Length: 187
Image 1: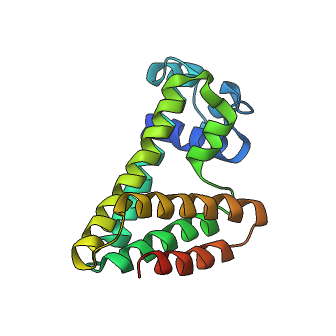
Image 2: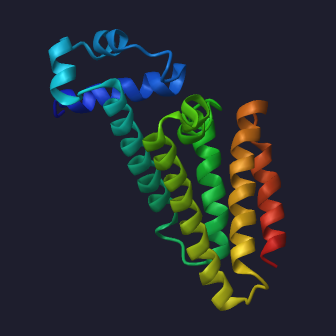
């Protein structure tokens, strides 16, 4: 097995801690201890905790879209792609033990105080919406829809709502509910 690079280990450990206990509750010393590195190693790779936060967000976004692409790459039917996106979000909730969306969590913790972070999160959610919009456009070519922009917005909001609801209830039935609702929107 290839040895993990120090920078990657720092990001992995910080990501895990930021996600599980929150950015503000995670100290640099804890990251250093759990990554089993010297303080100088951390600062060789990241000038500040905020730089590490940026690296965390970039990695999570990359992982998120790679995971999504793997799920929908082999599917040609647009309706099935939407259902698969819902299943993907459901699977992320299950594998995190209903810990919620990395991006929703960080924005709720950081707020608008850090414009780089809030801008990144807003952009991430826009990219998610663009993926849905592309699929809705594919569907629209096969089965004309009255308002594909509105349907895209509704699908996006239903999925985001299902994520938040499942985080609160610690159950995944909200995803099954929205699947039915979205099938109705697309018929």
